[in-house]
Image 1: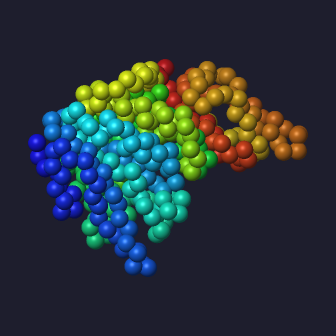
Image 2 (image 1 turned 180 degrees about the horizontal axis):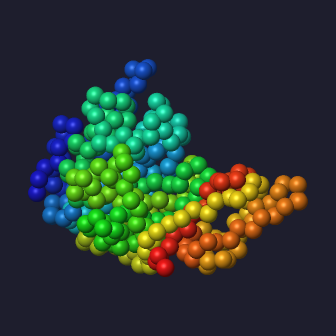
Image 3 (image 1 turned 30 degrees about the horizontal axis):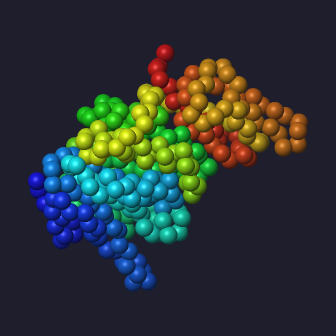
Length: 316
């Protein structure tokens, strides 16, 4: 088995330790360090990355990874290796914000530049140091402001091994999601390293259902590779091959009539938008049959706002 080298530190097979990915200086001369936690078995097996906090307000993912790190099975892996980045975007996490201090989105800074912006330097270090060590990984996110995502795993079905890894994780929804430029998973894919994205809940709000699904998915994934020996419930997944947003046709107060994650039928009444003065009520009719992938929790909406995200299992 090869030794792991991270920022001048060798981590040998059988070691569990923490090292610093790199140190970054703020204008106040304050040092920001990104911790990396490594759990290694002496027996050959896959090397999995679990990362969270790419955006500082995505607390559900951070909690999922924290819970995994506390598991005794993780500290005594039967085979393989686990690399854990609980909070990538330390600065934004401190301020509870999505973006970096310069306004950039860290997940649009990849593959990075060692002499670039703050975000570009972090991205560069991840690509140069962590990606070469792993076989695949799961990057944990949540919905953005006001958007509550039902627990889901996003991957590219036609990329080698993506769907197989997703089935092993077995989130409630597995969604075929195209790569976006500048993202961690796209640049990792170019290196032949699948990174799947887990989405659950909304920003700055714990969703314990989404957290539990994420934890169980990680345990199922590691168990499927014989890295741990643990009883974990099986979970049926729905395969989503296409998605669409239902948008507000009028402005007003938005009421959603279905549960997040539920199935809806084409032409079904799924919500209403009410005029705040009691004069108008506009029905929201589902244009397709599918599953609710996410919902806008904002009660006051404007014409054209994205309200309900629906995933389709077929294209007919």
